[in-house]
Every structure is written in C-alpha cells, then in structure tokens.
Length: 528
Image: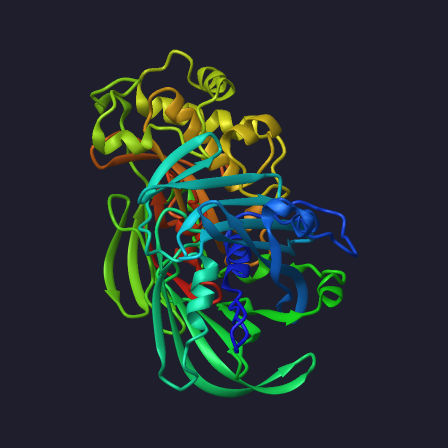
C-alpha cells in the first residue's frame, strides 16, 4: 500500500449520486438544515474505524462539494485493509451529503456506498444506499463466478461482471503508475456501485499543467481527464500534484455551472451546507406560444442547441423527426386518435417476449397487494385497453391528492401510500396500475408545455422536464397517460422511453436531458 508515491484519488464516485439527483425531473422535500451532519457510510464511518471485521483504515479523505460557488455538499472516502482466510481484501467506503432546492423546497440527500474487493481487484460484494426526498433506496450485490447478483426493492437481477473488472482500490492503485506527461493515457474496465449492471470503461488522459486557485492558495497542478462509458460526453477533470494526489475535481453541468469537489480537512468539510436553487435553470421559454393547446391535433417544432450539439429525441408514431442536422431537429408531434372499438384484444394481455418488460414488476413499478387493489378500483370490469388506460389516468389524477414538489423519485407503492407527488409519481403509479391488470406500460421522459393559464408568468408559456406514462394497445399503438397534467397534448416532447426494468434506471432517464439544460431553444413552426 505504501509505495514511494502517495495513492491518487480521483473522487469521481463522489459526483455520481449528485449527478443523478440534479437531473431528476422532480423536486425535493423540505428538510431542516444541519450545521454538522454526521457522516454515516454503509456500516457508519465511526463504527468501521473500530470494527475489526472491516480491518484497519489505510486511507481517509474528506472533501467539500460546490455548485454555483455554494457549498452544497460534503463527502468522505475511507479505505480499509483486512486479512481473510482467502487473502487480503480492501473495502472502499464513500459517503456524500448535499442540499439542493427548487422553488424554495430543499432536499437533503444522503448517499453511501461500500465495495469489497480482493487484492487482485476482483469485486466480491457491494452495498449502496440513498436517502432523502421521500424515497429511500438500498441496493446490494455479491459475485458468483463471472456474474454480479444484485438485489434492490425486492428485485433480483444477474449481470455479467468479468473478473478483469477492477474495483475502486485496484483502479486507484493502477493510476499510481500514470506517467505525468501530456498525452499519457490509461484505460481500464472498472466497477461502480452507480452502474452495477455493467463494467464501466474508464479512460484517464493527462492534459498538462494548469494553475488552479484553491482555498489554500494558488497551485500548479496536472490536469487529468476521466471519461466513462456509462456517461458518454461527460468528462470529469481531476487536478493532481506531482505525487499524483488529487486536490480538485470538476464536472461541468451544462446550464448549472461547474460541480467542484475540493479535498480538505474533516473539520472544513463538516461546516454548514447551503442549498442551491436549480428549478429555474431547467425551464425553456419558446419563441412563440402553443396557442389553443387543447384543440391542437398536431404541432411542428424546431429544436436548436446553442452549441450545435446533437439532440437526443425519440422518433416513432406520434413523434416524427422531419429534419435533422447537427444542432437542429424539426419534429412533428400528434395526439394519438385511438378508437376503442378498433382494438382487437382484451385485458389481461397474454405475455409475449417483446412485451414482457412492459408487464413485469420492477424496482419503481411494483406489483404489491396495494397496487393490485388500486388497479381494480381504477379499472373495474373494463376489458378494453384504451378505455382502461383512460380510467387509470383519471383515477391516478384524483388519487394523488397532494400535488406538489415535496417528493423525490418515489416508487409506485410508496406513492400509493403517501398519495403525494409530481409528474414522476403520477407516471410510475399509472404504469404500475396498468401492469396490475395486464396492460403493458412504460414511462416517457422529456419536456412538457405549460401555457399561461397554468399560472405561468411567461407570456409564451414554458417547457419543463416532465414524465408521463404510455400503455400498449396494439402494434405501434401506445395510449399516453399524463395524470399529472390531466391530458396528453402536442406540448409533449419525448426524449426517452423506458420499461424501468434496470436496477438503477435513473441515469438512463436523466442522461438525455443533461446536455440540453440551458442549451435548447424551441420554436413553434406550425400547428393544426
């Protein structure tokens, strides 16, 4: 462990939980501020420091997390070494806390993770927890051969995980030998608790030296870029000294500024956090309003990115891409005209391979007795899938009685209990009730349009991040269910659609919107 050179720490894992939270199309729960939040990694930092089963602490780092020049979070990273009958093992524990707010509502999010690996870097097991925003998630996994068996929310999944995939300590150990010269590159297959379903290809590239202003003063440091296959197009910049010790890590968030991690002391890291307002940065005011929205059958929109970057858009029935070139796409959105009498099948749908993901329960779309009971209340004896989808949309709109921004991304069963939430809670509950009666469903993430009659202060209305659900009613026919807004209209721009079957689907849903924040312009070309 103790070579002539200190072990470099890139701290990229500290950014990922915050990355997910920042991009959720939801808002958070009011939580009293804490002037000295106690660290509590999986197993608790203080406990692990004295627990012989965890071994001795060989590395301890503390950091502050800044966004928009505000101290919105802090974190700690501990490395333990222990000897077992099977050989030496390393345990990497990570803890982060941060605060964000939207429209005055504050979220205090806590994320913990722990990874156990052999001296060769083979990941043996892991555990990750996330708390805050009205929804608690716990995920754990262990290795069997070349697979990682992952448990979360009552779900069990097996993922390929080759033994050559390095754990966090082994990857850090490998980077000790990174030659600090411009152009030096290192690539490895790595494991992350944020992406347990696949190995992450991590590439380090040395750029050169730069002068950086840090709390302790100005320093000349090596700039090293980290790129990860799980987050294409998003680079993380680490600034290291000649010994390979990280002092600062930066991740650019389009529209939000730079997220910074600065290595510091425990006392400095534990100071009071500030909440960062994010909601207003996610809104887009179009150049023209979508007038007479409820009467429109179709609309043609031109979407343009200010920096010319590609626009990730879903294309298919109901939303067709008419033109596409770098930085600009023209789409036509139409309201589906579904005739219940034309549907040739009745509920419940017989399972078939292509529809199986849309009928199975998942982490966020559970099939509990409570969900089945609500589904029966919503649908009754209705067997027509189009009419059943409409009944579910109406039922969920009325069932969620507290419609505000006080909950994070809660699951369907959590929403069934709380009866509280915004668009995400409406969407997952619609999807769950549909599956409970044999109606294939999925969720859609994108933009939703709010005209001025929704209390919108913008004369042209605004587009904001939004989520709704869809029910399969026939080949290439999906019935939209937007219980949050009460209807589907041409103001819905779809970026991605998902059955939410992954253990950690939030990255899948939020990645498409990242590069569009404060980067997208929307123009109404024509309406019909």
